Length: 220
Ligand code: GRF
Image 1 (cartoon, helix red, strand yellow):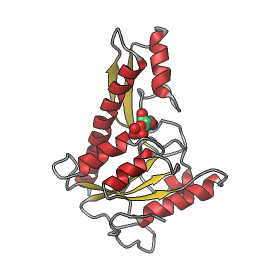
Image 2 (cartoon, helix red, strand yellow):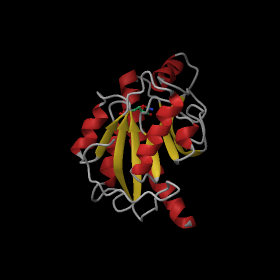
Image 3 (cartoon, helix red, strand yellow):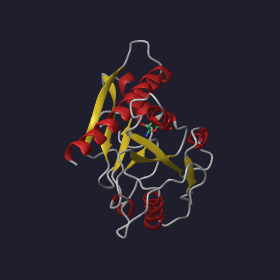
């Protein structure tokens, strides 16, 4: 179960689906540092671009040592840790889905979540993911390093960042919400390129959440 944070979750109806309030309830799944989580938390704070439109209501990590958990606690957001080691994947995903549903999730954000989600989760939630490369490129872990190495070998001329929906178990694939090119510079080191990618991720993730929520409002 989740710990800490404010317990203002809406009632879960018979069908287990929460009623959408005007402020979207975001559940963020993380595994590590959480700089993208931080960008979302900051965006939801007073004066931020998502202020009054979205709140992070729960942060779930599969790693108890993830620094992202500190960021959530610092922001007063509830956290839950679900170690995945030795767990049956379907049961694990069903439990996560239930936890997110209890929190009244309108949208689930994968922000550096290092596991593939399966149908027992995806059937219950709308999920978006962040990938530090262009659509169709460098799927899977280590995408930033692999992009950089490909550039060093002269195989690519730019990198990118993409945010997409996660309708199924495909890795870093699914309908694209937004993507942006990230250039290489002549004297780039991996660290330089990585910083540029992260800066773009932080911006694109927040903009994508905004545009998903706006689309929803338009068709309500
Ligand atoms: C990001 O580069 C994201 O695209 C990838 O994992 C990284 C997470 O960074 N999936 P952080 O934990 O948000 O700082």
